[in-house]
Amino acid sequence: MAQGLHVIFDSSHDGSPPRDDEIDVISVPGLNFTGSSDHARETWTVGEKLWLKDFLPSSLQKPARVMLFEYNSSPVLGAATIKIDDHAKNLLQWLILRRKASSSSPTFLQRDPISLT
Image (cartoon, rainbow, N blue to C red):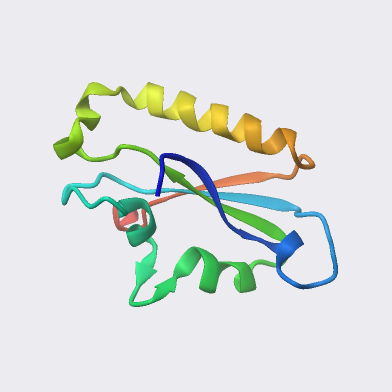
C-alpha cells in the first residue's frame, strides 16, 4: 500500500441507501520493527479479517468513513530521519484533502492496539 490516507470503508458506498458519513475514523499504526511492507494494514488484520473493514463499521452507531494512515514507520527503512512532527503534518495535509471532498463530520483518531497495552 502506498503512503498516505486510504479509505478502508465508507458507509455512503456500502450498498445501503445513500447517506452522508457522520463520523471519520482514522487509524494510525505504531512502529514497524519487522520492516513489513504492509505494516499499516497488518496491524489491524487477524487471519483474513481486516478489523477496520470487517468489524468496526458494524459496531458504530452512525454512518462512518474509516481510513488508514500509511507512513514510513520502520526504523529499519529510514523512518528515524523523519521527525514525528513531520508525520503529524503529513497526516493533517491528507485530512485536509480528504475532508474538502466531503461534509465536515467529527474525526476520531485511533492508534495501534498494541501500543495501548
